[in-house]
Length: 401
Image 1: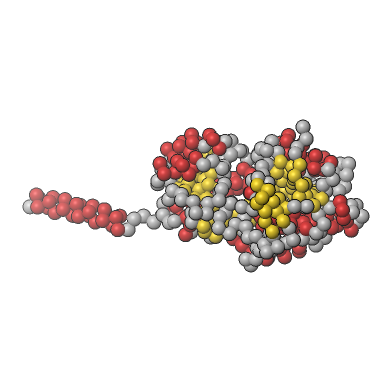
Image 2: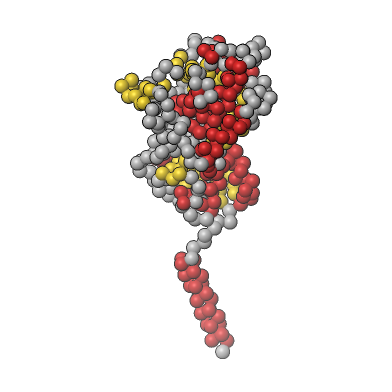
């Protein structure tokens, strides 16, 4: 009797185990209770670009608390990406985010098929075959650049109306890292926003040929100010240009600054107008939620999907304007900005790169574009592709020795 009882219990245990195994196969877990998330930063949070990207990490901690364990590597140059990537993979990260431009990420992703690799886009991804676990993303920065140009244009209009400058002195400056399409697209959108308010405005661009050098960026800004630029902006990664404007304002009352990625209102309270920033939070939160639920990232992040690449602008909260300085901005600036932002939110974007302009590819003068019929940015990829310097209205200068 006892043997039969034991046999019955053993049989039930075996059947229960088989049932549980079958259930797990047929109905796999759909939600991880916890997960590890990795971040690899090209700089540290003292620089505006990396600080802005780290806000996505902060949002993740706030949203999930102890459900996510975040591991980071900072100050990682593009050609040094492999070591930190492998470290995070071996630490058991389920998803890793990168704000650098290294091709190593896409090359190494196939070695870790169970990990999702999400990188800010650094090239035209349209038609590019990528590993199944590799993804790119970027906010449509030209929208914010154009709106910041509206704010700058309103200020230039005020300076003209107040008799502080003449129309032929309407000139903006731009401290730029490299002549890539991403940089050119941004500063062109900025100028076209300014010219939507003051059509006579011209631009002078000075390249530093590095992403992050306080000394070079500040020097380039001082050069642009000396050349007569009344409002400066930048696509570089330090506060140098903002500091140059604030220092110049001690002896002149016609110099102002438009920020990128990080508000400069505390750094340059007397000259900062407004800042535009890409918001990385929507993608980072959406991608982690997708992985946590064993879902495809591109089916769970709200944006314009281009294969394994996603972009979006104001309409999805991927771009925003930060800290409009009402003590410095011209009257009516907020209303003018809001009107354009509303157009973007409604899906109207064709008006930005449009007008009586001819652009020339700086690497191939034979390659030109006529903007009479317009150009649509980010049509098929999150990486900006407009790479033409507008004739007669944009001048590129070399930094002084």
